[in-house]
Image 1 (cartoon, rainbow, N blue to C red):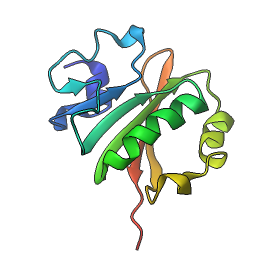
Image 2: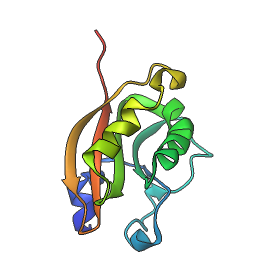
Image 3: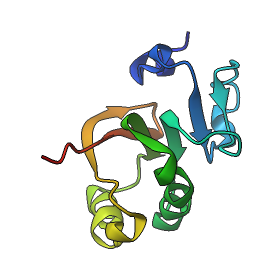
Image 4: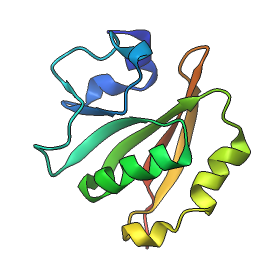
Length: 127
């Protein structure tokens, strides 16, 4: 088990979807439990989405959102050069209501390596 798998606590999931994986992570997610395609699933318990731009993020989320469960864990992995303002703009500038009632809130942020950070998102509980 790699250090990254431990940091992201991926060992507790039976299946993890890796979307838009950069080549620098080519050897990182090679076990059978990691899949890079959502074609054969309707439910996602855990996903890692690598994004460099707002458009990357939106395109990946349009495919992923309908498959998220109430208890799903979503990691957004982005380059360290991305500022907090740029990350906030991902949330503010996009009309999240267009995607339905999927309300995500950040619960944790970690440093993946020298070049990448990650934010863990979970669905917000609406009461």
